[in-house]
Image (cartoon, rainbow, N blue to C red; front, side, top):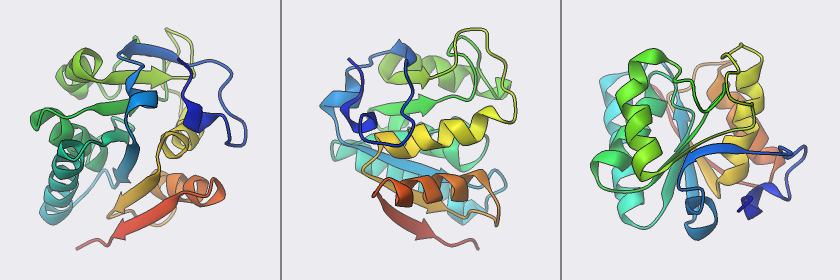
Length: 173
């Protein structure tokens, strides 16, 4: 059940923990959507709409369940009945940020939550750049929405370029 797309990246995770339908990662093409935690209304609407349209077109939406654009991307996929993949920087038994608990539960039920970190691993800051290589590694391409300079979203874009993935951008408003 290990995702084929991760086999060819630098430093693939040796194990993935998951909650939900891991088969999605090999059954559907995946596209990542990442971006700013402090987005504009335009950024929120674009992330939600792209996630909704792409998931209705057969893509699974991959993101990091973070505040902001990540959350709106997951919501767009879930609300449209599509599939989404939440890649965590903590154990799959921990919802971070905690305000996304209901979204985390919906994703675990209708999509999949994955992490390379064992259960009960807390969301330490150093875990998130490692998580970002998995977001891009699972994805055919990454859509970056309103990312700030030196943001985690741009780290994901750098990983995507290193991994030979397409990178698309929606500038900030």
